Length: 95
Image 1 (tube, helix red, strand yellow):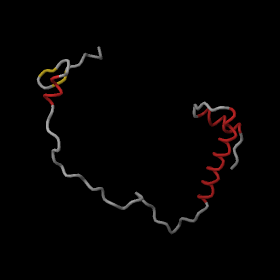
Image 2 (cartoon, one colour):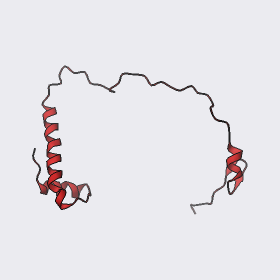
Image 3 (tube, one colour):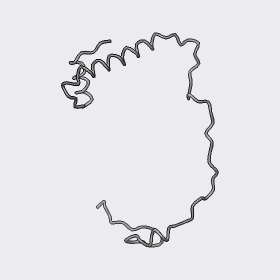
Image 4 (cartoon, helix red, strand yellow):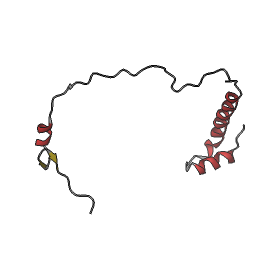
């Protein structure tokens, strides 16, 4: 599929993209190449190919659930502007 400069301008307008006029032909060439590749890929026979839910059939390794940092809440709250009962107090933003 070959796109024209007008097609690229229409696509840019719909996507709310600002493109320079001198780059329009370059975009048309690049986008046409992408669309040609997609068209070529859609002609491949995939009848005997099993669909994949994920490209890697592997299980994620989970990290050990253990504390690796000490509690520093008192240190951080010591420099906070306002703290009460272990909570940070902030100004009301919704009236």
